[in-house]
Amino acid sequence: MKKLINDPADVVSEALLGMAAAHPELRIDHENKIVYRADAPVQGKVALVSGGGSGHEPLHGGFVGPGMLDAACAGEVFTSPVPDQVMAATRGVDGGAGVLHIVKNYTGDVMNFEMAAELAAAETGVEVEAVITDDDVAVQDSLYTAGRRGVGITVAVEKIAGAAADEGRDLAGVAEVARRVNANGRSMGMALTSCIVPAAGHPTFDLPDDQIEIGIGIHGEPGRRRVPAAPAREVAEMLVEPILADLDFTGGDGVLAFVNGMGGTPLLELYLMYNEVAAILAKSGVTVARSLVGPYITSLEMAGCSVTLLKLDDELLRLWDAPVRTPGMRWGV
Image (cartoon, rainbow, N blue to C red; front, side, top):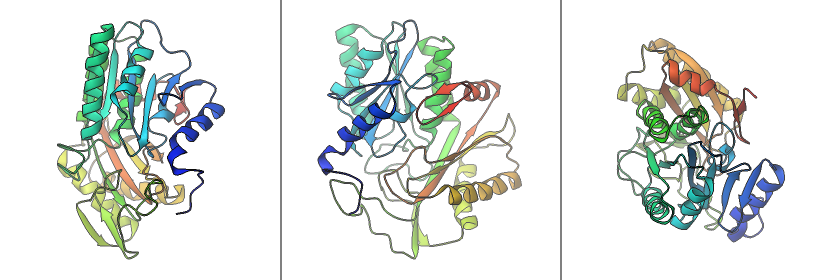
């Protein structure tokens, strides 16, 4: 294992120290491993809290700031944040208008966020709503989930719900927008290589050089199938066709087409993949209204990518375009 780390046990805490040094616009509770926007709580605004295991950066801590999240809880690598973390974050961002939890559909995440919401409501009376993302068409159930996994659409939910909260909508309104984004998004991912969890020190799974895994999860969960290595054009078809088969993306106001890097794939290859994805969408009668290319929800140093499509309407398009100022996503400001 070759990584830019000191002690594997200190990776998350030391990364948060670096994040604090690099981004003074954030405030970090190092004891609880929570990233806050510096001005939290914002009085009168619905607050957004998300989080999950570390190793997926910039998700979630890199999306804390105006236009997105108010706080993010950093679990250990690929490990859910504990209820005490989520409860502390919920209390820390409550500005009187309620708190929205955005939770990826992994069993530990769902259970711990639910427990934290109940504890926070009992202790402080804060109103909490939860939206669970479950956009992965690759797998219905896995070792980590009951139902589909939450993957790339989580980025869009955090962005669009964050814009809705900044507009001053109430908790029910922000939650409705978040659920609408999740319902209209689908994703599929693939891996060229495994990743190495620092505490383990060896690859999560064995993938021969001449094979790729289609339908992989962001923790190295098994995919739909393992196939011989193939050109990008064929890989794009393997990812996009199941998405298009699952939801009708034609008509309306077009889609957000999101090609995401899993951490170890250069932008050169991600843009090449985007070109292939765009060609398939054009041939299928799907109009691309907005695009996003880059490593936004990663799996340590895994090489590979995922494709997420979000069916847009006028409102979702406007909220996507709204200003955002976070370490991992920034425009309009």
